[in-house]
Length: 171
Image 1 (cartoon, rainbow, N blue to C red):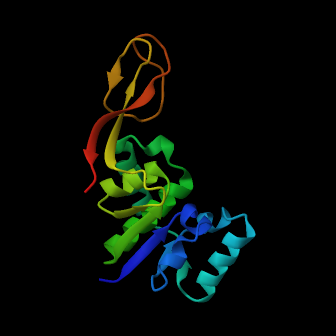
Image 2 (spheres, one colour; image 1 turned 180 degrees about the vertical axis):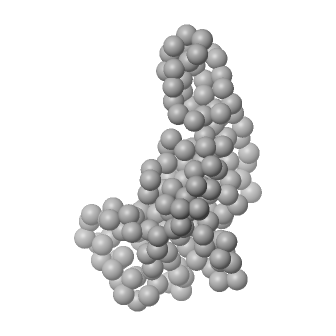
């Protein structure tokens, strides 16, 4: 199977792509729009002009699947629209028969990707576990196993916070 790296902004801001000179990369247009410094823009332009980096837009079907997965893990509110688009593109590539590797420093993005069965590369080397998030009230201790959005506690009215309901060590 052909292999493709799906790049988040962090991979293009760093020199990570230089360490993989024979690889193919793909990203969404919004990620390229986030590049504001000249060296990163030049790196991206060079990768595009040499045919190693393509920008693609995912289908709405894949966006819905990503949102469903992110909701079930409790990461949905921590993901930006760009993150969701990027994960949808990765899912699209996987379903097209590619071996997909998601490259990012965003832990919520990487966590959701790992639950979707995608291989991940953590630029910051901080991701050691898959986490399913829930909500906990810091005042009264009330907990809910699903974390949709941070909201008020139904018991005391305090704003609930995210907490790790379940953690599983990454292989």
